[in-house]
Length: 208
Image 1: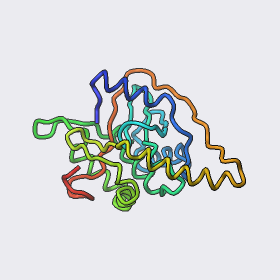
Image 2: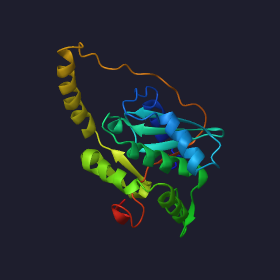
Image 3: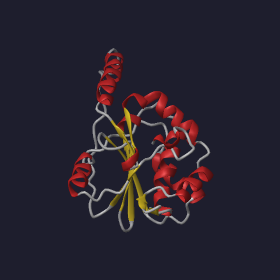
Image 4: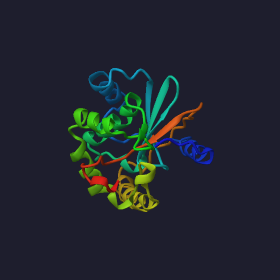
């Protein structure tokens, strides 16, 4: 998704001022570089990835020389499979290799050639999305006209319950100290693309 509304762009940037410490069991910077080298060598941007507490499930903000992937905190779990993060990174980086264009008179960030290339480089895609919809689908909302999947506020209540259980367990031995947050700013003009989970004919069909 390309954000060209100034109000929405400001809201997205504010939501990214304090990205969260990563809990996933895969080194995302190494994953991004591996995806670039193996599948998308034409991508020359400097790459970063952060977990954030607002916005779509995932999106990429593209500047002239750098691109930043933002993944929603709902996926920031130790149990999130490596294939989920791999599929997301491949999808978002693919926006750098295949830009949006008009299809049948309507601008789209995901033209047909985008989905063809994604199927070629991401065989893990269907299994990854099956895990996503099974485990966090309760708080996801498809926005097909905006070409993205939003995360509803329900994720916070579920996360509080999860963290409360962990806090109680940790409190018995380690004091129940939760990880701190780290700050980062997004500067400069950029295009932002939201994650669209299902291509036509893929998991979920045209309903995305």
